[in-house]
Length: 477
Picture 1: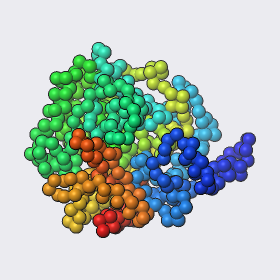
Picture 2: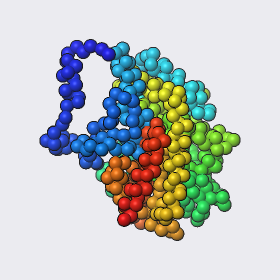
Picture 3: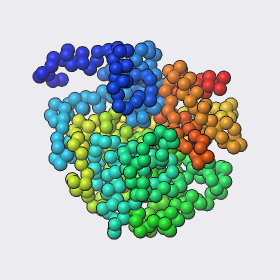
Picture 4: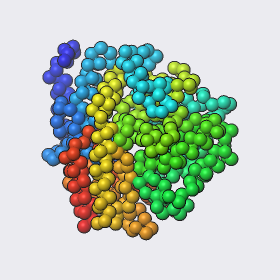
């Protein structure tokens, strides 16, 4: 595609593609500041240069792995999508980095595209882009809420089990991971924690809330509790309410649509900005471009927030975070929102092409179709395996709650670990929720995740179903 200047192409290929030794690996581990959680080494796609795939390979392993994690739910177009990689190489020939304050042609195109596809009341909205991912997008959203509320409001309401990033500030907004963090995060006084609806484990005693839908008898007591937290405790200081409409790391828990309708009304009444964190659900995973759109189709009311954040699927595997604010809101200054690499033309090229493919190839519709097949198959398995409790979607945002008994629904943490272990032996990689430390000291980590690339075929969906059942059966043997 282009000529090299300082190194030959062969020298570059040797640097990038040459094999590593066991000695190289051990040397890296000794000097690595971040301790790797997993022992396996990912080599990459099984078909380099042939488009995105749902499979990848571990080092020193012949059989390809069917990826039901999309590598932290990010590779919506699969591993190493050639269209995205071509866009990055093409853009890199013209400009690979500019200072954040400058516009570039690709930045103009991407901002206009994001404003065009934004859901509900956000359509035509104000756009901020960063290279820091979801955490950067959420912090931008919080700053935007601060400057768009009256007075000196500087507190944000967040929800139990929510996950919004790992920066020192956002660690306070996020559910604390028991026994995993060895430091106290900053800004704890800026975040007010409240209750997120968990219909399968409702503390008000309702027993028939399944699949993210509330019990038919439910009176939304949880929403009343949230209202009290906002109106009776900290209203004078609250600038915004921040939540994942469908909690990801906290357990694959969708909020019932009635809760979101009521929450939007509470925020409106109290002149508080509503912020949706769609870092996992945005860009097709739920079967719609946005989870917000999925909810809008469940009701006649528009649940869209004042501000929305997204990352993961937006970049086709490249690090990008997006914040979209209502078009009527005041903009941040460059001093309030910037970082050195946040106007990277190559990242924006990756994102623009990713969105084009999602739309042109109707990828969200494929996610909806394949997700229905998987969840339907697993529901049928409930007749054989009582250990399958709740099955939650939508689309390819699938979580399976594994339990020890149907009556008490005691979490079966050990079974999740065994299914993942057996899955690897069956050449499939499943995910799991983050550990939640309960007040009594017990650890809850019983959600198995099936969140593959959104491009999976009918044949791959059948393989996921077959390998899931085999892995579950092997784990129970």
